[in-house]
Amino acid sequence: MTITEKILAKHARKNRVEPGDNVWVDVDILMTHDVCGPPTFGIFKKEFGEDARVWDREKLVVIPDHYVFTSDKYANRNIDVLRDFARDQNLPHFYDVGTERYKGVCHIALPEEGFTRPGEVLFGTDSHTCTAGAFGEFATGIGNTDAAFILGTGKLWVKVPETMQFVFEDELQPYVMAKDMILKIIGDIGVDGASYRTMEFAGAGVQALDMEGRMTLANMAIEAGGKNGVIEPDQVTFDYVDARTNHPYEPVFNDGGAKYHSVKVYKSKDLEPMLAKPHSPDAESTVWQMRDTKLNRAYIGSCTGGKITDFIAAAEIMKKQSVKIDTYVVPATTEIAHGLRTIKLHGETLQEIFENAGARIGPASCAACLGGPQDTFGRLNGAEICISTTNRNFPGRMGSKQSQVYLASPYTVAASAVKGKITDPRDLM
Image 1 (cartoon, rainbow, N blue to C red):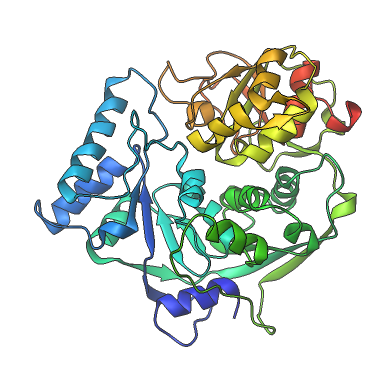
Image 2: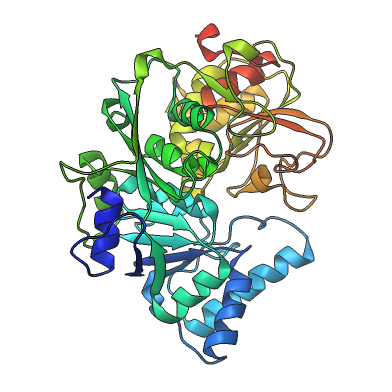
């Protein structure tokens, strides 16, 4: 069996499952946030009763992150609903905005707090929950009704997906990142090329990535329609997890004779900086092919491109440079924001490098990635042409439907911000 099949078999308490099987699985972690938490809690109370208790307080994680820094009364009301539910249920893992516990983007906060563990099953009311598959677990996004059912029972009915394997041979070339890898894959197979399938990432090129790079790969599996993304755990995985939790876990590995829907092999040394053109993640292009395209905004942030290694990459490009267009830097979490203030690159902190370059830094959150209320930091408000480290570029995704968004790696976004046009980072280094 594949990793995904073995995890689902174990959590269904079966010796074996096959793609296409429907099984009840036990849930290790359920995550929700300020957008989907309120309707999930409403359905839970309607179906299980006003006085119902969640199946396991320790396994529910509530992380407000999407519309948290806004004066919008509806967004603020959603936060109040989370607070009321957390208080009523006495939830230990509620990371409330405006408190010392506030974290930021849920998909990065989960691993930082030790909730992403090899061999487990994690569901979340957000499509990019698949990020956690980087840790060798089955992680996927679900709807509010499914989440409410888990709240009451701790189980969910799941169809076992087929597995597509994507193998990257050898390590990446300089100034090529995990974002380039996943954009290449999505460009090749399309936004529906992995519909309800596991996207498993393997090979020396993947194993050479740190955990944040692996999270970028798994994060965008959903952009190809994938049910989940997954990477076989190794010592890099264990070191990251063990540094953040003492919770026991049992890693799962592929069987030698595991059967795959398909296997696609890439030579990492041939991969170059990639773009997704407006208005779809599969509108593939190399950066070189789109070089000199004029821009008026750059954005570095989100669960896909707002991690500390993303900012280190961007700072390598922007140090002792000045940006020529409006450039926004938004750390995914408060832990990463602290890193911006304390981690130094050639004598300057990352934050100093960005500020000296003329970039604007926002508070840890999803910010402009999902558009949001008009006062959302970094939101597109007109006909901007933006290059971004985010994961989606559909019309209106970051705000205005009249804007155009190019998706790229932090290296490419930083280089383009400095030049004011789409630029291959290798041209600056």
